[in-house]
Length: 113
Length: 118
Image 1 (cartoon, each protein chain N blue to C red):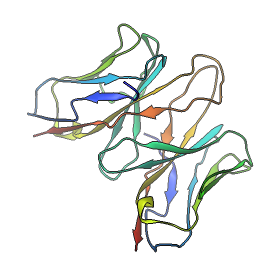
Image 2 (image 1 turned 90 degrees about the vertical axis):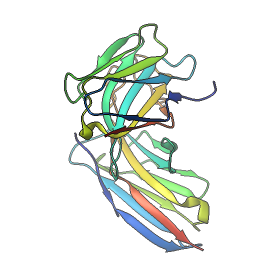
Image 3 (image 1 turned 120 degrees about the horizontal axis):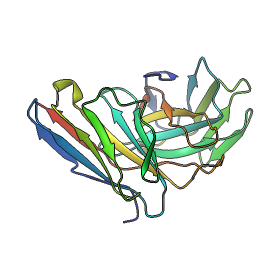
Image 4 (image 1 turned 90 degrees about the horizontal axis):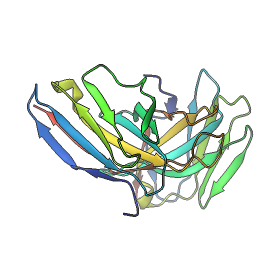
């Protein structure tokens, strides 16, 4: 099935560093979402973006909905060990009802203390 | 319960057998989704229920896969004649929204069922 292009695939960073990851698509989405998944768990929503150009923060996390509606990025500032996990972007097209999420392949983040 | 509950958490079955995976959504959530996540991949859509009916089953890979939600709450994903390629984590998610455009469409995921076909 269709998946979004997410990069980087993995990252190894020092505790305290900032992190940036992004997601692109060949088609337009009306909503962009960023999830974090820990081992053995389901994805947990971090940030949801509903309008092109929107910049939203959630604590140390900041995400933006690209103007073209074909991309989004997620930044994590001052990383800490509990930031370790897999981060997924997801896009959604909203019509008259719900439409399923299309996910990227994930960015695996490792934080070295 | 407070969150989406999936049972069993792990299932090992022999090739060719039939399996059922259960999802208990958050109470009051009308929308329910099944996704499949293979190792190293993001979740891939299988089927979406709005209430009791399957609003979109375009992600089901073939006719061995079937899902029901008879009373608009609990859903069961059924896989017949399992194959080794069916091994994956099967995720269920539910959300509150109904049929109208609504930005409040946050989907809450369960912890998944890890299916292993040997």
